[in-house]
Amino acid sequence: MGSRKVEVRLDREWLETMEQPLIIAGPCSAESREQVLATAREVARIPGVTMFRAGIWKPRTRPHDFAGVGKEGLGWLREVREETGLKVTLEVANGHHVYEALKYGIDVLWIGARTTVSPFAVQEIADALQGADVTVWVKNPMNPDLQLWIGALERLNNAGITRLGAIHRGFSTYEKTVYRNAPRWEIPIELKRQLPDLPLLCDPSHIAGNRTYLGELSQTAFDLAMNGLMIETHIHPGHALSDAKQQITPDELSKLLKGLRFPTAQQSNGKTHAFLEVLRQQIDFLDHELLEVISRRVALVERIGEYKKEQNMTILQVKRWEQVLEDRLKQANLMGLDENVIKQFYQIIHQYSIAIQSRVMNEQIAS
Image: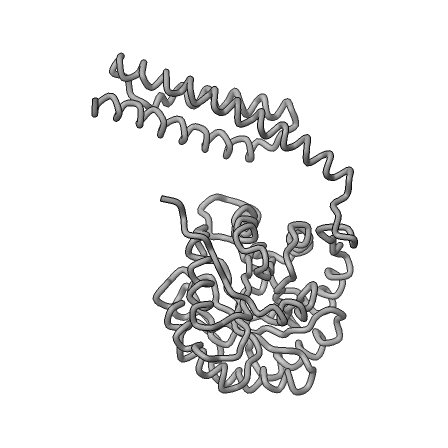
């Protein structure tokens, strides 16, 4: 049985008028009226920034960490909009948050990663948004689960929200990386494939966890045809009450944006570059060859599974697997390939081989 086709109804007029790229900036947390307004005044001077963000309800891991100023911050955000002309946006995590935010006329709401992971919480928010005229962005869940992300978007869409978009902020991982959250770019790419009209922003602040990497992550996002950025910006990042290491000053944000390229997907006449098309055809040819090689490898794996069954051998042969991985990584290194990528590739191939051999053995047992 095939998977159900994903369908999300979007407001076409809104899509046509949305800024390209859309740049959202502001502090991780609204800490005081003075901090919020001082940051907003500086952010409003930066060309291209049209929306101000600030968290007033902060889902924190530990109960004694700063969890936001709460409802009081809504008044500060309203002042930001009135004084600077910037639209304002904040995170909501339950129906009560939605009610308060709408009461204060907040322009845009977003659902955070810790909330997206819970269908119950997302449904509560969707129920509270029934009939509301507001834009909503949905961050990816903390774990790399595309269906949870899509499900959250569908729940909001079913509630009548058609000004709807997604935000890629990376995924939690136990693996040691330079980033706070693994980008796993393939997941937002697949979201874009399934929902090509859905606006998709990148939150490089939460991916990086460190201001050092914001530039490179932001550029990658635009190279992957994302529609904009949400970057945490604080008037005094070193004194921030939450996520100080990943926030930058308004001046640093201005320099970062000036240093970015904003590539287009196609030529202005809508036709793909001829040279690019030639290269893509070569890629297609190589991919067909690669699939043929994988098919021949699968046939050999099936024969190995049959032999192991006849000889009463375990499917997993640890020493052989270690030998294969070591050999392939050495070869990859000599060929100038990224060892981490090749390692992940062979781990997937190995898992596939184990599954095939298990199927072969089970079929023989059933017969």
